[in-house]
Image (cartoon, rainbow, N blue to C red; front, top):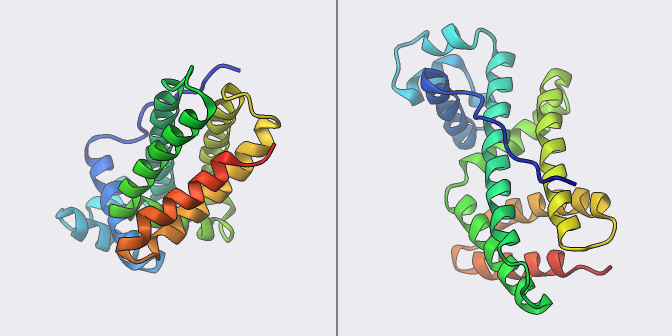
Length: 201
C-alpha cells in the first residue's frame, strides 16, 4: 500500500484569509455565530467581502470543512513521516517515541484549539446537512487511509479496522484533552495515547 500524501491546499489568497477567519468565528462562538458579516469582521475586511467569495452559508461551511480537513490531513501526514523515521528501533523504544510524537502534536492542537473546535462543530452539523457530510466524509476517508498505511507499515493486524478505531478514539482524546485542567493535560494525553497505540493484537 503506497503512502498517501495530502493534496494542495484548497484555498489561497483572500479565500484562505476568509476561511481562516471563519475558523476563528466558529471556534469562539460555534456555528450559530458563523455569518458572512462575522467573518468579514474577524478578517478585518469590508462588509460584503465574504459573501462575494462564498455566496451562501452552505458554501461557506463547505469551504471551512475543506480547509479544516486539509490542515488536519497535513498534520497526520507529517506525523506519519516522523514515525517512519523510527523504523529499526526496538518495539518499546518505537512505542515511546510514537507516543511522544503524537502527544506533541495534540499539545499543539490543544494550545491552539481553533482547528479542533471547528472540526467538532462541523461534524455535528454534517449530521443535519448531507451536502456538508459529503465534504467531511471525503476528508475522513483520506485520513483513515493514511492512518491505515501507518498501521500496516508498523506490522499491526487488521490495519483498516484499527485505523478506523484509532481515528475515532484519537478525536475523542483530543476533545477530552481540551477539558482537562492545564497542568494535567500532558499527563492525560500520554496515558491515553499510550493505551491506544499499545493496544492488543
